Image (cartoon, rainbow, N blue to C red; front, side, top):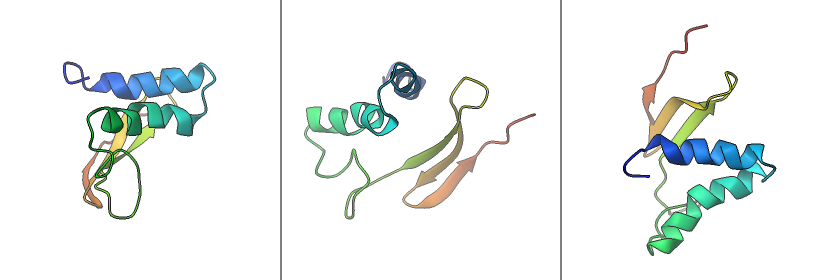
Length: 83
């Protein structure tokens, strides 16, 4: 995903659209990669003591769009969607 960062987000929503439950699809693109590189004790899931940057996503247009980004618990970016 480092060559095309949005690919993980799009993959998550395609997995969910194929019938995989959203929590399971989310683990496939967050926790599983962290486990693969041995950093799951620090990141990859939302748990007390772990590092977590979060995004809010709007998919009402059929394409997942990041609307809010939180880094270290603070809002760091917010998009304004045009109607």
